[in-house]
Amino acid sequence: MATTNLGFIVQRPPYKSENPKLALTHAIASQSVEVYLEDGDIVTCDIAFVGDGVLNCLKDQKAADIYGLTSTETQVKMALLLDINVLICKEDLDRFGLSEDDIVIDAEEFGADIETKVVPYAEIAAMMEESKHLLFF
Amino acid sequence: MKLAVFVSDYRLTVDTLDRLTADKLGIILVGNGVYHASIKDKGKASSLLDKSAEFYALSEDLDSRGLGSKDIADNVKVVNYAGVVDLIFNDYEKLAWL
Amino acid sequence: MGKLTIGCFASLVGSMNLDFTVKLAGAALEKGHKVDLWLSGNATMLSIDKQRAFKDYSSLEKPLKELMAKGLKVTACEACAEARGYHKDNTLEGVDRKSMDWYLASTFDADRVLHIGGE
Image (tube, rainbow over all chains, first blue to last red; front, side, top):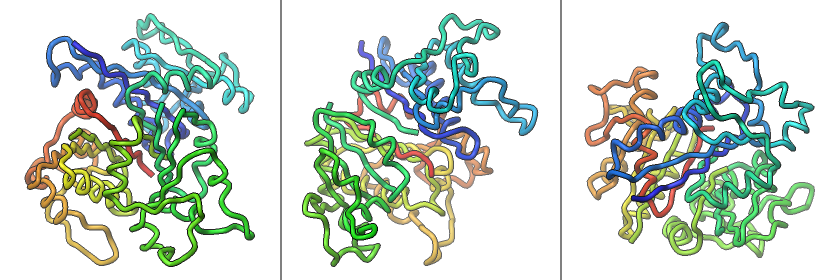
């Protein structure tokens, strides 16, 4: 039995590029990875939003109405539902004049038990240190 | 953490890179990232090269961009693909592509 | 010898990242390493067969086939491919199509993971 932990780092804003969406869909796919592994072996993901990437976490995204697309807001909530650790860089929120009121914190309407964590960059660096592999999106 | 960062752009990635910390940091210049190894902006070498890191530049990407015979910064080692593979497996534990 | 998992998300045409990916995979195989290649997002374009080669566009079918013959395992994201109209019946022979969890599973026992995001 073993665990491989992956650190996903999202540094781009949503929609122009497919990267943030693919980061979230791949992180969410960690929930079904066991089908390829031996019993007890798992792959876990932490996902951190840094730099312009914090803009993926803004609330009230209307991408579903306008483009017919799942918004990154909804995907962040899906990640919470699946107990994926979601970190959002506090310094970058501050840089944009954003507060916790502006971003996804919980996903109660989905039945999620955990919340996003607004943390100093140092905690994201620590997550990268602890992850076996890093995936920058 | 021993981290090798692949820099594949000339200008776009310095912010992210500036924040990365590692006990051992390697910066592998590939694609348009190889311009950092040679091109001077108003006579000044790329500030990327001021970082405390080991620097490498991919020979094929230097050659394909007309930089093969140009001066390469003294602190940049030119490597081929086989050299990159050795760096990946022998010198660093984690990889980041920016 | 180790295992390298490469995930590439960049387009075959319009980016040189897949060219880098295939060359790096070849160099790693040459040194006796095992290499898994995951193609996702626009990189699934590499998995289509019968692409016409022009001098102005990257064309990697030939080297990819040669590397697969030497043991390179290539898997394309099925959803990403289907979303782009790339179907099973025009997928390059030898390229597998799986869901995204395959990539994560490949990282499980990988010694190194190089994730090359999209442009």
